[in-house]
Length: 387
Image (cartoon, rainbow, N blue to C red; front, side):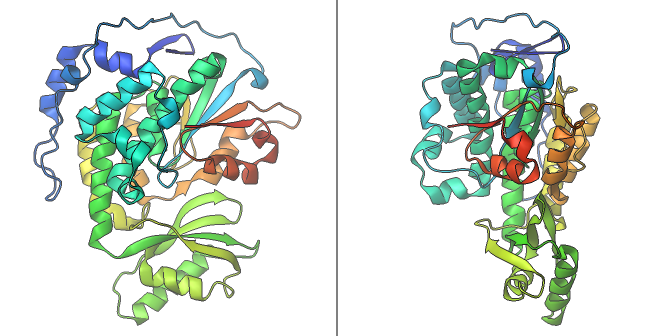
């Protein structure tokens, strides 16, 4: 499969991992940091080139052509989901595609366990663990791109932009030619393990909130922090971690703060609150411990400027260059996901201008629901690619 964008020849991520510059990967393998912070073990990856050696097949490599300038209805955008979208059985409908089989085979060697079996058979409790679900969502999302390419090649060929929710950014960047599949998966592995460890160090969580138009989320968080201080908790954390859609937020922090918000939901004009099935306050400063391992691993892998527009969770703006990507992927861990703002940036256009086709590639259809709440007109051209 080729990704034809702006005249650049971006081969399929797996082909590139298997065929291109094996000497580079052997050299790279030895350059991964040896002793990161305690608890993470040895981060030196296996020899990726050796793992992904081609098996005799010679994948086609069509040449990319610079597309002519076209109207929005002749373009597409891809959205990649994040943690929380996983479910037992995902990936089952994608095994008929050869490239998907190769992806999961490579993932098993990189991760050290059978990811496909975990995705298809569970158990759900193991799949839900941060260290498992992030690689699972990453690989399954790129596998969904394979399905989209088989069923509707034009949707991939005419793609002009992508965005991913949290860990979904890594899949978006691989799709856009900015990162290699194998290297990005290893970075996701390190990220997931570091976030799992940070989560287990402090009792914390995340609370989904839908509020009225007059809801004051920052004020509610301030009140919750003051409540925690009255309980003797030093430096309590309670802040907006995800901006999902108008009046849709995820608030994260210490469990005592989240319980306070639930008990006082009417006071803060919250219509609905629900604790999410995660064990950490992702995208808050409680994830500070996870930043160094990710920062170190990103320094060792090759990152290029994306061939299409990819939007950052941190500021809802397009990534400009490799250093920019490296910096913001780390900052994302301790910053709120500005998804609502990203949707506005991606779909902003003059009145009367058509919207592109949008495809959610990966497990679940939560991003489609958010798009519907952010921009109903754009959502009318939305489709989910089932996994």
